[in-house]
Image 1 (cartoon, rainbow, N blue to C red):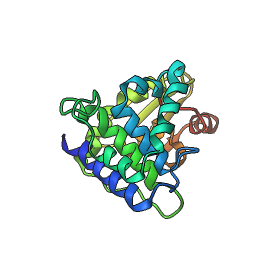
Image 2 (cartoon, rainbow, N blue to C red):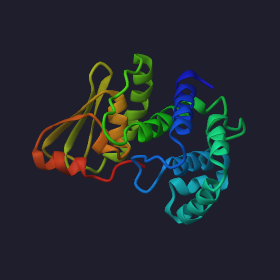
Image 3 (cartoon, rainbow, N blue to C red):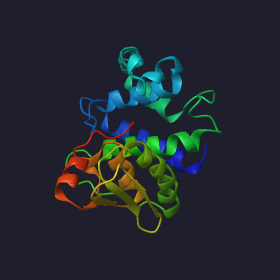
Image 4 (cartoon, one colour):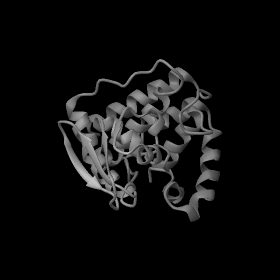
Length: 209
């Protein structure tokens, strides 16, 4: 496995163990046990993983996730830490592409609960890796937003997206943009420059995939 995906996986597994199975996350209705079960399902149950993205399979995926969540918590975390090499999303050929963003976001889902948290100082290489994933994510999630949107990560790049209208600029580090665009607007440290109504609409939009 490559370094950024592996590092985020290990850090998340360590944090899950330290906090225990019932600690909160920023995912509504999910404790740490639920988040761990989601990750195990994604990597070890390809028959149900499609439900993460596809509405017709969602009920089945949730039943499978709940069944997984009933396992001993230590076993769950160990399965998060040691994914199977046969998994479509965690084998050595796909790990960095499929898991750098996924595990960064879920690591922050656990870190950014309550008060007193601060953004981590990430290596520039990690920020660059996240920016490579932020750009297509922005094009997908914001393509229908009714404004001229400019998503800017100073020192990494800028993209434009949206359906047109008054311009609105979204500025932040790649890591913060990744959280914002994946539906974690309330904990993402980004700056919105533009009309107040558009900024408010974007902060409250249902983003992510």
